[in-house]
Amino acid sequence: MLASFPSTGILNVNVQHMLAAATGEICQALIRNPFEVIKQNLQVGNYKNMIECSIDIFKHKSLAGFYSGYLSFIMREIPFSSIQFPFYEILKMMQIKLIAYRKNIDENIVEIPSLVNGINGSIAGSFSGFIVTPFDVAKTRLMTTNVKDKLPSTGAILKEIYHEDGLKGLYKGAAIRMMYLGVGGFAFFGIYEKIKQTLIKHYE
Image 1 (tube, one colour):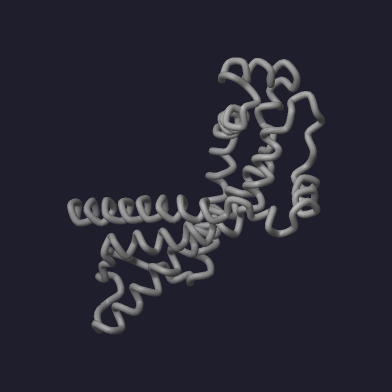
Image 2: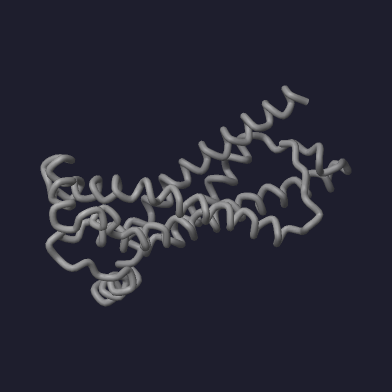
């Protein structure tokens, strides 16, 4: 792909990616969280349908009930994005520099195949997904807590899970998360870079 690197250095670039990702995740979680709460409760069989679930949650906990697990949600999403995007960029930049060195050409004209970008995205997604799995487990527990019960904190849930099953409990579902995030990362970054490359070429 066509690339240009700011003179501020790789550290500052990564900080920019992390801040942008964190801000985006906080905002999108405000919208997604209520849907996640309803979805999780339906999946574990707490309610028969979406309307029954929504009414019961609002009846017992008002709007706050739809934000059960919000903290654990963003504690999962922010680290995920903050790891995934910089890691992906680091992999991409390393390859660009290597190709430029081997071919003795300028880094700004190096193009990375979409397949390679997809593989980089898959690696970044799988790795990031594994790291934040404990927060995903905690989120599920919190979102499916009986609406009549007092909602525990994210820290309390993590301690409870660790006490019950140790590290194994905190990483339940890690393998399937790595698989679907790896596939998702492959498709997202591969297609994203391909379309961006095509548009740059078209307009230049």
